[in-house]
Structure formats: structure tokens, C-alpha cells
Image (tube, rainbow, N blue to C red; front, side, top):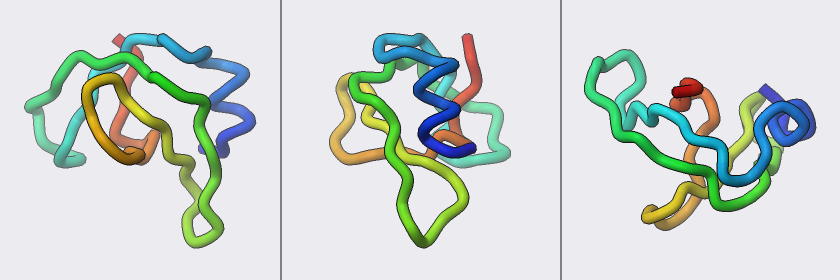
Length: 64
């Protein structure tokens, strides 16, 4: 998912289930703390989450 679409659909502060290991059933409840941004080497965007450093791929998020 591209950042522009993610940002229009999910404003900063949206709550998600975050799956640190994609495909695993364990998740954490998180909120976004920044708008998403695209990275040239991927077709997915990254976004910052509250309480975590760095960006995570939006493909690891599912709306709660």
C-alpha cells in the first residue's frame, strides 16, 4: 500500500493490531504516531508507531 492512500484512509492516531512477525498470530495493539512515507526500494510504505523507534511496514498492520 502506498503512503498517500494509507494517509488518506488512516489518519495519525489510528489504532491497529501490529504483527511484528508477518503471518504469526501474536500481535500488539498500537497507534500510528506519524504519517506514512514511501521508500523507493519497496511497494509498501512505512509508518511510526507509538512506543516504538523507527518505522514499520504498513503490511504488518491490521485495523483493530
